[in-house]
Length: 162
Image 1 (cartoon, rainbow, N blue to C red):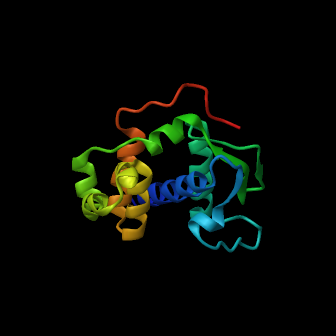
Image 2: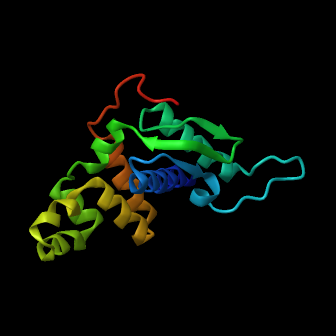
C-alpha cells in the first residue's frame, strides 16, 4: 500500500479491536499511546499528526457502530470503551478458508492439531487480526481489517456513538 495513513489506520484499528475483544464485556480505557506509541506534544500542547490520526480512528470506529464509550479523556483516550454487538459478531465470525490461507497460512495446520473444541477459533476474524499483527506485515493487517469490517458486513445505522 502506498498510503501510509491508511496503513496506520488499519493497524490502529486492529490493535484497538484486539484490546476491546480481550477485555469484553468489561469496559476499558483505550489510550492512544498504547495503540500508536508515545507522543510528545509540541510547545503549545498540541499532539502530533500520528497521535491525532489514531485518536480519529478510535472516534471513527465509534461513529461506525463498532465500539461505544462514555467520554473522551482529552485527546488521549476513550473512557470506558466496549465493543458493540455488531463488532463482536464480526470479530467472532469465521473467515473464508482462502482468506485464512492467505493471511495466516499456519492457522489451518494449527487448527488441525488443536483439540476439536478449539478448531473453530482458528477461523475467526479476531484470530486472523491477531496473527496479522504478530506478523508485522502491514499489508496483512490491512487485508484482514478490510475483510472483517468492510466486506459484505454493514453496521446498523445509528448504533455507534457513545
